[in-house]
Amino acid sequence: MIDETFHLTALDVRRYDFGRALRGYDPDRVEQFRAQVAEELERLSRLTQELESKARSFHEQLRAFRERDKALNEALVSAQQLRTEIRDQAEREGQLVLREAQVEAERNMEFARAELTRMEDQVSALDRIRRTFIAQMRATVERQLAELTAAEETSPARLNYPGSSGAEQG
Image (cartoon, rainbow, N blue to C red; front, side, top):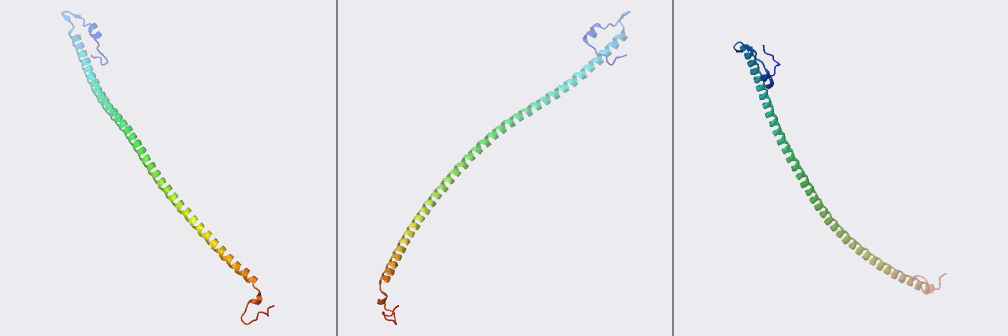
């Protein structure tokens, strides 16, 4: 009878007593021991194969994990490089936009200055026209005032009105 939970160790082999028979070891016990040893060796062989298969699987998984880790590291480095390139490009574009805005602002300032100068010239011209007009009006008003004064100083008797004589005024 074979014990299924029997696990043979080197110590078991060394201490196993086959017993003595008349002419040597008991053949049945030797055969029983050999069967147990064979079963244990088969079990150990199967276990070894399973463990080797698992070890190969684990090594394959480890290789795959390392490849993924390498790919992730490469992707991370690539992403960092891309981030740096994008940031640098954004800075360059920002500087370009800033320079363009400064140029546009300078153009607008020059236009505004020119427009201001033109308007100041127009205001000066209008002021000259106004002063000239006032001077002309003053001259006209003074001339008319002088004519009025002269007309007041003239006696009414001297005026000749059509159909009247100078003595009939009242």
